[in-house]
Image (tube, rainbow, N blue to C red; front, side, top):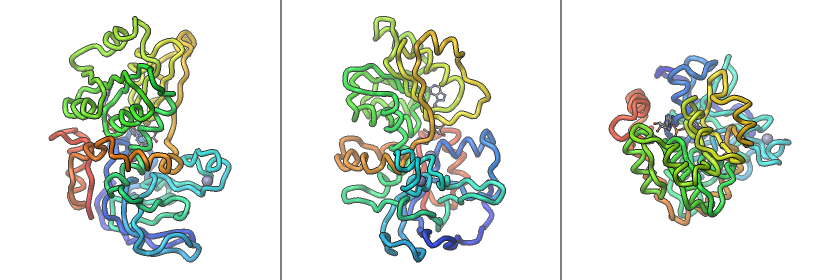
Length: 337
Ligand code: NAD
Ligand code: ZN
Ligand code: ZN
């Protein structure tokens, strides 16, 4: 990563669209690259996979989008037609690409820029619906879809006891998602006071793992059993370990945190002894978005409260540092070109 000037993107395929970026954001996923935990990305790749903007130019095969349309985007492109897209797993589209990932010259630049090229635009981009603000559109494109997906994969339903491990933007959105799915007893674990405050404001019971023992609290609330499901939205081995400690026998651990470790933080024997269901992977955001638009339009949750900082693109390097160090109550940064 760097901040040298790159050439403006151009239309390449007839199904491409160029989007003039109005806002983009920094994601916890960008931090894996920032720290070199995730390897392989080319130097000079434009980062950023969360954005809202205006269609500036359309390839000749793009019928449904017109210049001027206001759009947001899932963090990967998808064709809408392949084996995986037809099954709702748009994150694994046979021709899909992740924004902000260029490896050995191949891939797609990201949206922390003035303009972004969007391949497979008609089946990727979503026009901003009525009663959805640009910031809510941006959240729908990744963190809200991912948080909700994690809750759905966890099998959250009315009456259960659930624990959220990690109250970053994705974990906070998972709280809203779990509540939307009917969760009543919902614990939310982190160590950062501002994030725990946001978790409480959304409706979860906050637990600081720096100050108390989450296992004692969750087991205490369940006659010693543990939670019916644990949602892990961190992506490190201590969070992985904690999730398995908190789940009851027969329960589910649902993971969207991106893991770069070589090994699981629990053994096959522990999984066996707990009759554990383990679900993991990249969120098929394009598939999730249409079903989540009504939740956003309902305004039941103050979703944009996760955005703590609004800065300019030229302040990008400082914004990365602030978000990484989680200083000044920084939970999510939105950048304006
Ligand atoms: P973030 O870094 O802002 O948040 C992570 C939070 O976890 C922080 O608040 C941190 O204090 C907390 N944490 C760290 N260790 C912990 C522990 N042991 N127990 C409890 N909490 C702990 O990141 P984010 O933007 O919220 O993203 C979270 C994760 O989700 C990242 O790994 C990101 O790459 C991943 N992600 C995955 C997908 C997907 O499709 N699967 C999509 C988006 C993001
Ligand atoms: Zn992201
Ligand atoms: Zn596809």
